[in-house]
Structure formats: structure tokens, C-alpha cells
Image 1 (cartoon, rainbow, N blue to C red):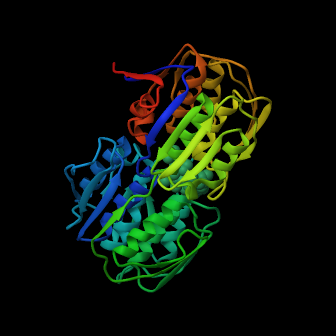
Image 2: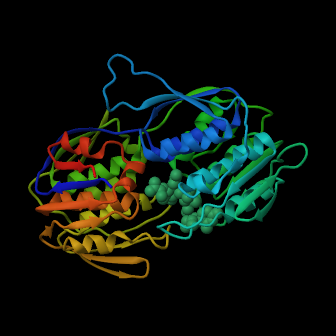
Image 3: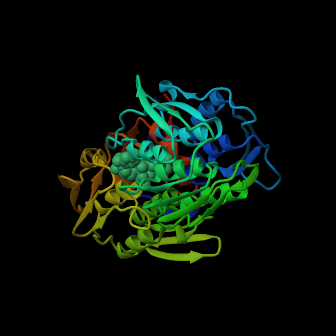
Amino acid sequence: MDKIRVVGGKALTGSIPISGAKNAALPLMIASLLTDETLTLENLPRLRDVQLLFQILSNHGVDHSIQGKRNGQDEMSGQTVDLSARAIVDTTAPYELVSRMRASFWVIGPLLARMGEARVSLPGGCAIGTRPVDFFIQGLKALGAEIDIERGYAVARAPAGGLIGNRVVFPKVSVGATHTIMMAAALARGETVIENAAREPEVADVARCLVAMGARIEGAGTSTIHIEGVPRLGGARHRVLPDRIETGTYAMAVAMAGGDVVLEGASADLLEAPLETLRQAGAEIDVLNHGIRVRRNGHGIHAVSITTEPYPGFPTDLQAQLMALMTRAKGTSTITETIFENRFMHVQELARLGADIHLDGQTATINGVSTLKGAPVMATDLRASVSLVIAGLAAEGETEVHRVYHLDRGFERLEDKLTRCGAEIERISA
Ligand code: EPZ
């Protein structure tokens, strides 16, 4: 199995191109199930999760073709892909595939809306928490679906004339349930109002794409979304927005290692809370026309405390990375995780590098230390893995991060991007 070797102590200088957002790319690809015309997605990141979703979608009958490179595109440019679900050949999403990536459960919405039926495996356990799907089931039932759980599958049927618009109130903010109900409601009869909807920029991005496909949606990006169902959707061309989590991750890497890096193509509007946290931690952040410049020169890292929250709060997907940064801060910080109950697997691995972290329920208290020392560590989930790389950038000597397949799910060419900025980092293939 591949591992990543980092030798700490090098400042980062240069530029890092920011890829298209994984968490928009996945639901956008799933939206291709809603139409028999071609959906063209630009700036799709090259990630393992994207590859896996191609495979899952092709099982339902979605063909995809990756367009060739154009003059002037460098190797870091995202891909342009045509997705075409001319005929849905299978409405079952099997356990073998869904258990490998939770977001594939979201196909239940478009399949049900377009085909009137779907049989989708329940995703099962997950390293960061229990992650149930009750809000999806409640929401689809509100649109008139009948859903039974049979032998580990959610078996869903729409009423004879198709799904019917309704009011859907989520008990708690859920990104996936918002995407799914929004996609299903786009083809339902009549109006759907989603209340307590997720406000994440990726939801707004998917809504923009659906509107380009002919959907009638207002309010995406706020907590109330209105959808007036239409009988059919058509093809469209849509560019995936920049990845705010990748942006925040590299910004924290620069804050950790020191240096001066421009995050090319990043959009500061998408991550105000994390950038403000980084400023408080002592990084200098400048918003440019074409990206964000992050610097930390000379002075140390200040301790800052955060609580993860749904957007626009501090994202759970940057919690592990901030914790890595705080291990070297002057003073004590606290990090409280409110989205997932088990998203602290990186704590023990950071401790292997010399971090001083105490966990009490959902709150980690981090006492900054003056040095971290490189060691072999194990990646446990996507964001936890990258937090270990960030720690490795500032650790003395060599850190080896094992099980890097987690990283490849969500970070495109991580070691190339960091090497371009002077980091000593390499992938060692087994
Ligand atoms: C999305 O996951 C992201 N994934 C996650 O990114 C991200 O951490 C998460 O949103 C929160 O921002 C993608 O976009 C592909 P949720 P999602 O439904 O939609 C509970 C990453 O590292 N809940 O918003 O699965 C749930 O257990 C990842 O890129 C229910 O109780 O998350 C959690 O506590 C990992 N019942 C909370 O809601 C439900 O039916 C929020 O989860 C659904 C969710």
C-alpha cells in the first residue's frame, strides 16, 4: 500500500492550484441521472471518489466520456466530462458499491424521481460516526414515496403519477439529505419547500446546475429552498466551484510550515470562517482577484478555539487540519466537534508526533508544544490523513503517513502541489 513520506522544516513558497470541489462534483455527477440528455461538467477533480462514482453511475446506465486536453491547459487543470443517462438500465445501487462511498446513497432521489422506483443499499458504518439516513427517508416519504427497508436495502416507490411536492422540514441540517430532496423535488409535481436546508455552497452550486438543466429552484444557499417541479430536465454545461476544503487545508499547511503561497483559483467568499480563524492564528491572508495569498513569516502560531458548525460556521471537514496547526500554537486551544460524534481519530496519531491533546467527549483541548517529532502514523479518514501531512510539514525529521488511499479520495495530487512549493514530500508506492 502506498505511503507518504514528509520531511518537516521547509517553508512553503509559490502557488498551488485549487481543484474543483469534491463535495459538489459528487452530487453534480448524480444529477446526470435526472435527464436523458448530456450533462457536461467542467473542472471535475481527479479523485478516487469521482472514479468510484463513475463506476456506480455506469451501473445505472450513465455513460461518461472525458474530453481531451485543450491547448494551454496544464496538468493540474480539472477534467471536462460528458455524462449521459440516456436510459436508466438498473435502479438498484448494490451494497458492494454504496458501502464504499456514502454519497452514492444519494442516487435514491434522482432514480425515484425519474424512474418511479429505486432500490439502494443502506451505506452502513463509517469511520467518523453512525451517519444514519433517516432524514432522506422522511423527506422522500413526504414527497409521496413508499419506502421499506428490505435485507439492508431502502426499497422506494413513487406514487403512480410520480412524486408530489410537499413541505420537508429537516430536524437537523444535512448536506446529503438537502441535495437528495432538492434533486427529487425538481421532477416532482407541484411545489416543494425544504426548511432547515443545508446552506453549504455546494448545495447552491448543484442548484445552479439544476436550474441550467431547466429546474425551477429558488433560495438554495439559504435555509429555505423552494422548488417548483417540472416534467423533465435537459442537458447543461456546468463548471464545478473551487474546493473550499482543499483551499482551507493548504492555507493551514502554509500557516503551519510558514512561507508565502498563492492558492490559485480559490474563492475567499466560500470560507470566511476558516480564514478568520487563520488570521487570528497569526496568518496573513490577502484576497486576490485570482485566488488567496497566505503568509506566515517570523512570528509563531496563536492558539484559537473553534466549534464546528454547518455552513457558514467552521466546517467539520477542516477540524482535523486546524487541530494539527494548533499542536504547535503558543498556548491552549479547544476544538469542539458538533457534526460527527467520532471525528477525532487523528488525535491519537497526532499524539504519536508529540502533540499534547486531551479529549473529553466532543471537545479536544490542545496544549501547544514547541516541537513535533516525525514518526510513522496511520491515516484513518480523508481529512484526518491530511492533518497528519500538515503536522509532518512542521515535525522534526521524517513522518510516514500510511493508508494514503484515504487521501486520494479527496485530494488531487497532494504531494505534487506541496512539492511545487518547496515541501519535502513524496509518495512511496508499495
Ligand atoms: C457531507 O456529508 C459531506 N460529504 C461531508 O464531507 C461533510 O463532512 C458533511 O456533509 C458535513 O458538512 C459530501 O458532501 C460528499 P450530513 P453528509 O448529512 O451529507 C446527521 C469529507 O470529508 N444525519 O450533512 O453525509 C449525520 O449523522 C466529508 O469530504 C442524520 O442524523 O453529512 C451528521 O451528524 C465527510 N440523519 C449530520 O446529520 C440523516 O439522514 C450532518 O451530516 C442524515 C444526516
